[in-house]
Length: 541
Image (tube, rainbow, N blue to C red):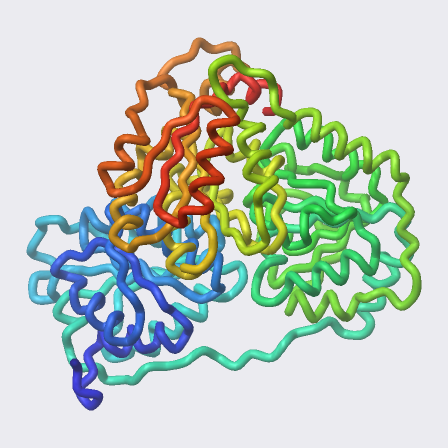
């Protein structure tokens, strides 16, 4: 244990992280980061040994998504940080405050020694909000500055490069805590202008994005939407900001060309668009210039996202929950959407994502519907990247904010299992269900060892269709022959058993439902390999 009067640079960095709410650090250590691992552990930040660096970054991302507190990634120098870069880029595009404490060679060898050596800071700068060499004389101050940057909206990863001898050296400064920031609201005149636009609209429509989950905004968003009687769409990561069983919910938007074509009808019909934390980083390119500049539009968010993807109309930035409370209606809302317009949108989307008949395999839509029918508000679900994810977002209805974790900015394969492990570490008492394709599972199944070591009772559903179906679909729709997408998947159920999990393979909906119900009751690490028929994806996307 380090003497309080003799703190090292690593100690004051870890203590500053702990004061900002960090609880977990993830990584695969090398000798250059051992001081960072020790210091985090002694500051009360639990270190979790991952089996691959991208997975460690995905775990850190999930912790931030669930808690709003920064999470730490500790990659070793050279190949460690190089391997982690896809996960760091993911945190950048998922708007996640991940703090990267990278190791570096000792300063005595800088500029001469070259084994495993390249410019870590230059590597990270394009995919972080801040990346710098550590100043050892201001280690805590620089860490606090990096955290300020990481947590400012939109949040994102930051990186400090720390030579191994520097991390051991005696600290000059001491740990620092977070800033004390007061809510920022609109002036009376600005609030009056926006209130007038809302009061005059007869067919207003809300588009809700990831910013609506940030801090304590979700309850204010729900109150605002209900008070103004705003039908709404949510991006995939904003699902559950308002219960998707709510009568005003029109479903999800973002990636399915077929579903978006239906939903954009409501966008065209609306006489006012209200964008709430609506970040286009989640959207496909059909949303570029998705409405004319002359359409009445209000943008409400924490801060600008610095894009010109679509016209934003009148923009208001600050403490989102406080702004929404300012804009509460004084009297009755004038909203009067034709019921048949909204009913037709829901009906047409439901028709697109309906289960199809299959022979000898499971309809993916039927599988997700079975999960949806059992979903409870205290569940956490994760879903990976591919055709299954797009479909899942239009079938699974989230009951609470942040209930479905996914990579929808960068769209990284291999996200679901690491994110589910992190979710179970944060909330060990809750049911956590990961859903992913066979290609994703092949990328990340080593993390089953982490789940087994930690004794976490995850339920992992692997949709096995022996191909990268989303890419096969795109090849087909582009008139191309299928190449490089089919493969021979292993027996995932047997592999799971090798990790100490319960593994079961199913090829009918009845078998899946029985296996899933058994897993829910058993509260043990379970992998359900579900053989699915991907044919319906071609009509859904």
